Amino acid sequence: MALSFAVVGSSSSIMCKATNANNHSHLQDLSYIKRAALISDKSAGFTSPHPNFGCVIVTPSAEVVGEAYLYAQGTKPAEVLAVEAAGERCRGATAYVNMEPGDCHGDHTAVSALVQAGITRAVIGMRHPLQHLRGNAIRAFRSQGLQVDVLGEDMQSKLVEEARKACLLVNLPFVYRAASRVPFSVLKYAMTLDGKIAASSGHAAWISSKLSRNRVFELRGRSDAIIVGGNTVRRDNPRLTARHGGGHMPIRIVLSQSLDLPEEANLWDLSDVSTVVVTQRGARRSFQRYLASKGVEVVELDILNPRDVMEYFHDRGYLSILWECGGTLAASAISSGVIHKVFAFVAPKIIGGKNAPSPVGELGMVEMSQALDLIDVCFEQIGPDMLISGFLQPIPDLTPTIPSEDETFAIDPTVAPFETSIIFFYKTWDLYGAFSNFSPHPIQMPDEDGNYVTWFSVEHYYQANKFIGVSNPLAQDCIDKIKSAKSPEEAARMGRLTQRRHPHLVRSDWESVKIDVMYRALKCKFSIYPHLNSMLLSTAGSVLVEASPHDLFWGGGRDGEGLNYLGRLLMKLRSEFLGESSAASENTCIAL
Image (tube, rainbow, N blue to C red; front, side, top):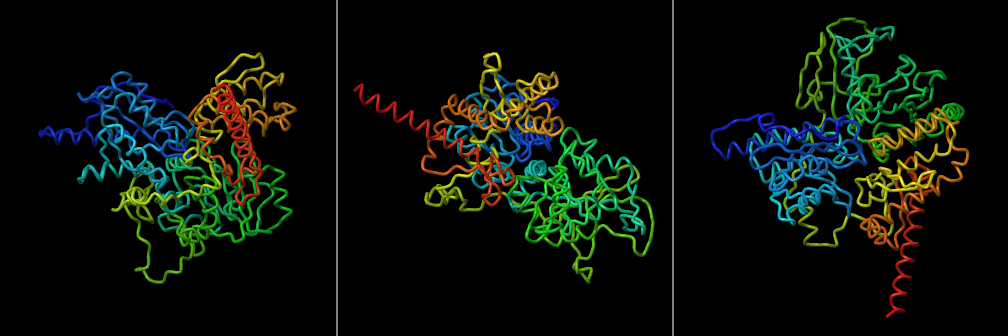
């Protein structure tokens, strides 16, 4: 998967023609913004929990001189990559981005890259969905003298709305998640022409064609997780892999209230991807221990219902979830209002059967007028099957109302959305996201021979250190792969997977040195980036909490039960930096 694209001529990108010059320019704008949305989708599944970003840079003579997309969390922004591809030809050019940049506070790399490159105009497909980021980049561009046009606000027409919709569609999971506070959820099922998902005996392989199953693998590859219920585990023993969905492997989630699950199941095999079992508090504690012994994570909730489950995984940072469950759980999820879209594969087969299961169980509806209508329905033939898709909930409208939140804040600065006594950070989209060990800030650290080596992020360095000093060629090979990983997420996956599969490759003293390894890497990061140092010092007096709800060592945990070692190390560094600053001030006063 390439991170940037070669320069192409204008003929390959201009898809609309008109006789009027202004109209022609207008159509070109829409063509390029659609192009930005199209290329942003190339990394779907890899950028989560971030949106998909694409950027196209076009000269006044309508020549595309640079285009790129965000590859993954913690990698260079699309705007930076596009500027690097365009070089000096950015001067006086227009940048087209499918979504307003959402850089971390104090590190506006996307904005500054376009400004410093000499871009004079920016066309933005949509504002950032997150309230605390919405409008920030637009204001920053305009404060630097750039002309900014936002689809649906500064540019309005039927064609503009079509282009804006293209930008919305490519980031639907992010948009829905921001609006509903639950992950974007898609219900997928395959059924016969008479509405059955299995025979009366329960046999269900295979209803749809191989081409349809390949499409399902693609859907899985674009999702953070796949959900099934206990019945599906017992009846089908699925693997839920994304065999044809690219390099991204979504985790598997099993919902089971009673934990009446088989001891042997494909989902307990964690060699390729992890599994989380969510159950009701207190259910079969002995079986919970059995699952934990296999490495399966067990999460207990007070009441097991789809809404609480989705809110939990929202807090864990999940962006999109694919539901591949049976009719009972599907009905419960729909009734809970957490399903946003439906993909129904209809096979030209009839199997009959009075007791044969259907894709959606009882919803309590007694009249056809109560039926749920899909919105924006699409039909697609896939081999012999028909794919029918549509939304159960309308796409959220991100167009700001008047007066907007930004204008209200300008009038009354006391309207602030953040609490200052405790500062939470987790993902790199947070206000203080640059504190994360996943932030894209390369560091230079000495290797075993004392030579300084550049690491793409703190997480790259941390994961590689698990295997440093181990006299095994496989350990060195793992270090090299982690070092060249394209994103911190990939580095983390490689390190964790190798540690789980090949514990003998992990250095024997790892548990006793890992905190010091992280500390040294963080100290390097906050020492070589002045703006990060200033940001850290600006939090003096506040408690820093790494808000990961599932990391009980480095993070604070969902209910604050975590050890929060990352937050502790940052506060330790802050104290040290403040002490150095105070000592320097005292020395200056003495000298005077």
